[in-house]
Image (tube, rainbow, N blue to C red; front, side, top):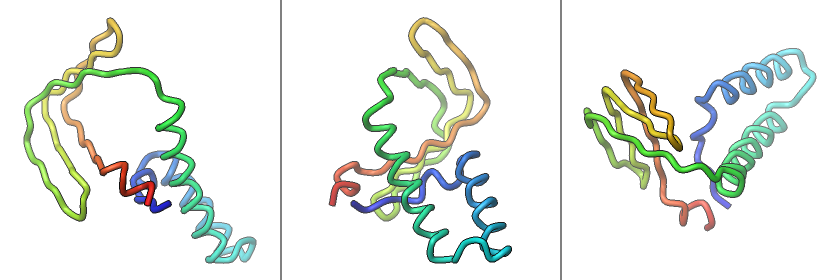
Length: 106
């Protein structure tokens, strides 16, 4: 199963990377094991999102920028409205990164 490093820039991914860096610097963990932990983290996040998330969301906003590179789409939207169930929220800016799920199963 291939993985993308999509979740490493999330809050939990940054905290995990910082903790692993500290452990490598202290000699508690080897760099190879730290990399294995990060790869497993990406796989776990991908699997959890695919199997456990059941909510549907509606997103409307002004498309500012879009890119397609290495089979990964990146969209940047401004003045975004989210609708989750009956609740609506508005945020100023949103970045969406999307990849083909078929690539993850190869």
